Image 1 (cartoon, rainbow, N blue to C red):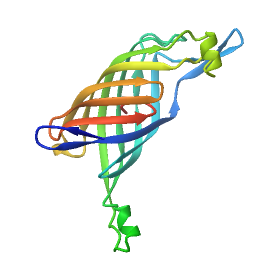
Image 2: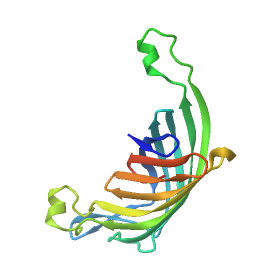
Image 3: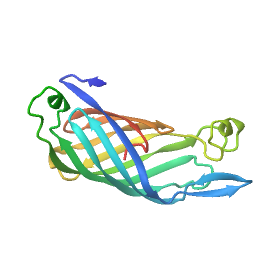
Length: 194
């Protein structure tokens, strides 16, 4: 999938994120297990991104503020953190199958600072029969919208990105503008933006 701009085409990236550790917990009420979000949350996770240019793999970590913590997870949500890892470039799988010389992969480090602010809500009541049938009793599906800013720490020419995001369950999308490279868009599965 590509996004057309005035001068050139910018590509869309596929992203898979997931927490390795966070301070979210579970509580029990009326024999139902229910997720519980603390007011202050520290998160460490992994992020993998696929694009035409190659594969990025790394870790993210950050602080999340939930001014309305507790069982009903609805309201403002803010995040301040960083991503760091390596970019695998120069891999052309087609060369391996065509009997060519293959490719010469290179790995380069990356690091970004990330800030998000938005609203998160839940789909339906936590103890509804519909959520029970969907296997989400006590832990309804979540949705959210908001904005983000991201700054490349290692590359001064990498620019700063600004934009908006939305997520429904594990599916998330974001789009915005980088001050150096122009429009950008991402489609992801997992935790939004990070």
